[in-house]
Image (cartoon, rainbow, N blue to C red; front, side, top):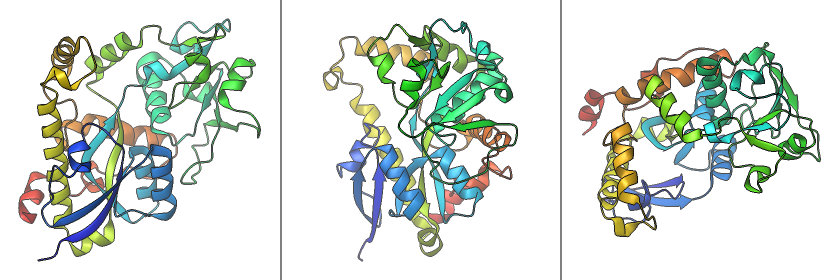
Length: 323
């Protein structure tokens, strides 16, 4: 019996490498894996739906889903990241703590960017930030056009300028960008991190919230799911196996160019347990409910979906049905 030929676009993560390199074999599927960076991958999927299966921004997926786009996620979350270390302040402008951003101007890549969405919600929920008082300056066009909530004060970065330039020139007091800004990389005295010890802040946030922020999920075109719903289960099992292989590889310190890798792994396990990257709905419900609330409150989605309606298969019962 011939296998179903599908394309997968994803990042080149250690969690996915056994799948990318063909070590993990999928039941019934001949997978052509294309690795590429997030902006290109997300743009090509959101604008042109170029791939059968795609690692996609969770925030953008919810916006696309709200607008009736024709793909559905499986409960796989290959990229998560805390973003406290990406929150930048301009020096000498009176910002000492997160709540000092109130009434200030803060630069973003886009509103739809997962890093920005998560940190806006976290700043509001945990650090006393009043999002309504902040002026948000967006550098890029949104991948999926939408109308922000009326209370959001949104501005566009002028052509020929960028967030880092405006921050250094005194035209912004803060920035939240998905990559490390050049001014931070270059140790400019004009800027600094809003959280001086971001790792400490991130651990504290995790212990209080139980959330390890989800950046990306994996989506499949609805046409494929309608014709061959078993594909979702086969892919979910393959991603699970790839992660299992990765964890097994991590037990050998020879696989890392890190001096204190064993100590780092023990520290991680003491905070997160054995699996910081669970691929299911139950262990991710708190994070998923938070991101839905943030997007709804900020006008990115017009209705609040049930978490189960966003993913297929949504339960162990559904997985067993298609096996």
